[in-house]
Length: 358
Ligand code: CO
Ligand code: CO
Image 1: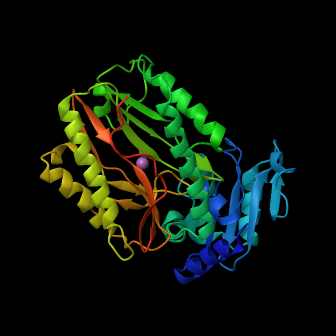
Image 2: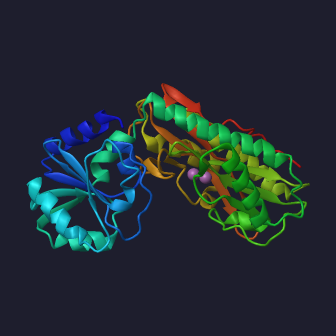
Image 3: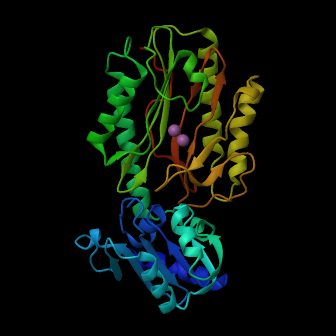
């Protein structure tokens, strides 16, 4: 546990007149306490934090042997955990007031909580995002490991016999390769062959990879909770000349956006660099998403790199740069790297970006 993080949250809470925070399992809980509690289904698990800096976890007794050296109250099956929560809230003087709530808290927990007092609820992310956006040295190191695993998997993919393979088989092979090199996948791998590449979030199906396909591969690894997220588009045989032309446009857009990254630059400027490049080449209307998203414990987090991105980039911020062009009926190209701001931008993922033809 890094006690500074919880302390920082508490001072932000005081500064903005919040009375307490209720944090259910997820990446915020992990970030603040180091507790890696998996989704416990319907069993109420919540960290109560008071504005005076006191905190206590309420958890099912299933965790009795795993949660050590942390203030915790356990409840067992058959007990009503909300009675215990009410008692804890009273102890923390939190029977009313302004409460921060973990954004992803289950609705049934929140509905039960609403009956325990007169509260005003606010999303926890509104405060924690400011802390999580700036990664420390350790976090960037973990992200570097996750990125390296993604790069190595790309090297492996290139050695496989891809022609004739189904998208879903390739996605599974990618997943296995990621799991061998890291703590697991950061999201379900995307494999989109040929015309399926026109859908940025295509779910891998039964289509076989053929000569003449451009194939989009989008996947990521997780290391000690931290995510990588890489996309490469490769050519099998000789794809449609238009797709090869598009590839060069996307590569240039990605490079221009990367070069726009710097401390003090608005996130929206990075998006603009990519968007202008694609627009000039005449494909503006086929670039249908933002240029990137923050990356860390979550695959999508702040800062978002879109046209409206108002966040000023700071050292330690990490995000993706992933422009793409998608042409219905023909296919698509996307190139995605993970980047950290260190004065200028620095790529964490380093796999080859020139078009690879197999
Ligand atoms: Co991706
Ligand atoms: Co991404």
